Image 1: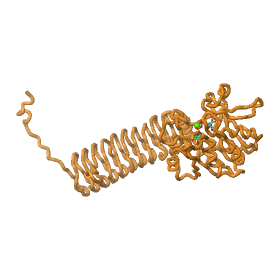
Image 2: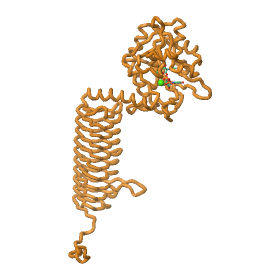
Image 3: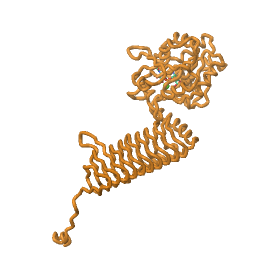
Image 4: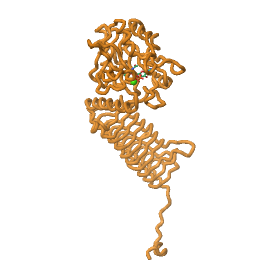
Amino acid sequence: MEVSIILAAGEGTRMKSNRAKVLHEILGRPMLFYVLNACKKSEIDKNIVIIGHHKEQIKEAFKDEDALFVEQPVGNGAPYGTGFAVSCALGEINDDDDVIILNGDAPLISSKTINKFLSYHKHNENDLTVMTADLNDPTNYGRIIRDSDANIVKIVEQKDASEKEKLVREINSGIYAFKGVNLKYAISKLKMDNASHELYLTDALKILVEEGKKVGTYKLKDKKEILGVNSRAELSKLECILRECVNYKYMIEGVSLIDPKNTYIEYGAKIERDVIIYPGSYIDKDTFIESGSEIISSRILKSHIGKDVKITSSQIEESEVGEGTSIGPNAHLRPNSKIGKKCKVGNFVEVKNSNIGDGTKMSHLAYIGDADVGKNVNIGCGVIFVNYDGKKKYRSRVLDHAFIGSNSNIVAPCLVEEYGYIAAGSTITKDVLKGQLSIERNRQRNIDGWVNKKGFDK
Ligand code: UD1
Ligand code: CA
């Protein structure tokens, strides 16, 4: 059986965070998500995740995940280090398993590479295979030390390396494949005789070499895949790398990104062909945008955008927008807004928890909260749905073809029936029946000669 052990129990000190390192996100998903995802898409049968520091946070974030979480004791004088982490999972490992070990803080590994690595390991009948790479700057990685015949003999950590060893550019990726029986043997022999006083998994290599076991390396060409995150600077560097890949994929699939470097699409967002996305847009992983829509410098979260919609400089959260509708500039759809087809939600319009029928227009400066609005309704400039009396919220209903004049207030709960007309400037507290005009304001009086009498023109 192929089993993975993913190390995620470390403290992540260099992140300076109250959050577990592997929960820090890249394109809207925790780092650990990507490692698990690659494992699940590969030929691995069982995934074991080692957790310790912040273990409750990690278990909660991955509670629906099909993985086995094994706890590494931390603090109170417990040993520390990658070797100790692996030792905690040995009860789950059979002697004839092929065990692949990965780091939870190196999220760019792909299922393709995992599969190639495992088949290389098996094909060569190695007892241990280490994935390595040549880096221009190997700082902080373990170095691969070879003998005069170029056989690998040990891995030396940065802290323990001599000046000569520090010059080695071939590094340990932190990804290994072991035969179960060899892993168990090597782990039982680890010692803490190093600069960090930790149990280093890397020492397993030297132990097996000394036992005359077959130890090999697999050098990765696409070095990006093994990059790890130890600090927030590295987190953003990896996010840039992944964003470039993800954005490129969307373009291959027919989405136009005017400036991919300034377009932020989380991992998993569904975007159809012929969508055009302008710079400065942010689209989260739970959003679906249908073909032909244009997204201009907008932020869209957990929403469904229909075909041929145009959204300009607006924010849309947990909402639906129907085909051919235009939103913005500077509109805000708050959660649970359902906008029909061919609607117009214009400048400075805010909609919350409301249903808007097809063809309805609200072009400027309006607040529509807790309302059910029918088809082809006109909502004038400055209309407010007054939904809150200081204690409770109430809903209003406006039926098809109604006309709400500018600067009106609809005080909920209120019903405006079909073809109901509301005169501009009215505050409506009683239902308006079908075809009625409702006008609620003082009659205008014009007083002749008033200015002259006051003497304002002198
Ligand atoms: C490790 C390797 C190094 C390699 C590098 C690749 C060792 C000793 N060093 O160094 O050779 O080049 O990865 O990125 O293995 N962890 C636990 N429990 C612990 C300690 C760590 O689960 O007690 C986990 C961490 O959460 C992390 C992973 O193991 O996901 C690696 O630990 P980290 O401290 O980041 O090791 P590096 O110094 O990067
Ligand atoms: Ca690391």
